[in-house]
Image 1: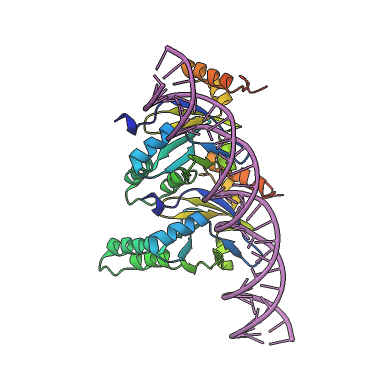
Image 2 (image 1 turned 180 degrees about the vertical axis):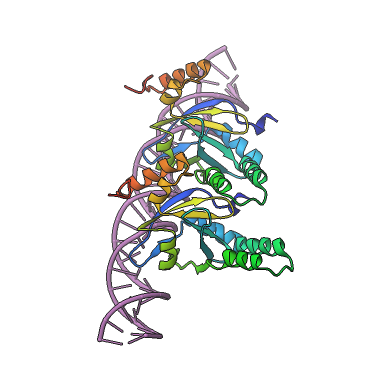
Length: 161
Length: 161
DNA sequence: TTGAGGACCATTGAAACCCATGCTACCATC
DNA sequence: GATGGTAGCATGGGTTTCAATGGTCCTCAA
């Protein structure tokens, strides 16, 4: 069961070509759940970060959207369809376990040279580490773990540096 | 499953001959769903933009229309038939992935020198970028992504410029 | 004969791909 | 328990492919 949920956290680099490694844990969750290496990323609607999930979860979101409206045709439905599908990007994870982050997504989530992954069950979040530290809802334990990871990589503990 | 839905967004140019590239993502969705390179475009009835879809979705719209009326013959049915089919244009996507936009469609949707594509599941929308920004139902996240794309191409952020 | 539309070629910049390297965790052996 | 070997993961770099777009020529019709 646990192989089917995203959990644990990791700090990875985003290089000059906007490539980044998806943590190996998450990759195997995706492969176990969806039998492929497809990853979906979209900006969060409630925080300045990205939300990541696999195809199975995407299908679930799509089914929710469809059942919310049935055969209805309306402005509301159209707006919701845009919000549900428009900002989502699909990636296929390469042999080395990486994807390339499109600049528009990177910037919308205010991401810099590294990325802080936080597992959250059916999905995971990906934050700029400094933005996560500054977030009002940040978990103190996760912040402490993040600070340790930053230190271990020789990265500054604060964005200003 | 997910390869069969339109999602993600893109900003493409419309050149002096009214040629425009259909985003590669959308092209492969069309090919996967309909086994051809046929695209249908029609003005939206609820917004100032174009709606695009493939042959499979066209068939679905047609089936919905038919089941709504059965064998009924009426002015309403005729009016709905006109609305459903009258303004639809079929395109075949060329080798380079482009179509030529008829001036009437371009003008009806108030399209200028570029086009903002938004995936919405079984169909996608195509807006003039400045008109999308100004739309009351615009999604703030998509607006932000659009502004980034405008900037990346050196285009003005506002229509007035 | 001139303009419009369509087919075909050309360019450029980004995205996918392939190969190489440090690092660490785990394993087997001594 | 120490030591050497091996494998997997996170990264860096270079190369090739392809998408998006601009341009030219050709054809057909008015």
